[in-house]
Length: 161
Image (cartoon, rainbow, N blue to C red; front, side, top):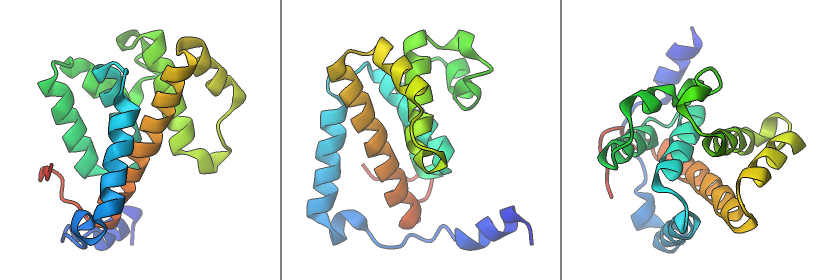
């Protein structure tokens, strides 16, 4: 059996627990963290971070939601197609966005060796301390949302906000 076949068996796309109803205080706390993290950040940057983390985590539910939100906010379709390969398509992204995408990858994949000093330094050079704190909080939050959606088998295309 291939990895794709194993993944297909694991993901039946039958919704499981309704996390918002089962743990309303925890759900509201994540919503609060999400809102606080976004405060003062460029909405386009917010969506790029959320899209990249969702791609890395394989979260179709969040990926669909955030690419849809980005389109509604006027994001360029070509940039959306390049988020997954941003290193090879740097010309689509500003230095600040590249630093945020790099940091998003490092934090999302923290189990692969932590957050390298050069990645952190690159982000710290592009964002002031407050912005950097918000970028990190946003990365933490989208990773939490991805884990909620994946563990409760949220179905892509069914935006429940």
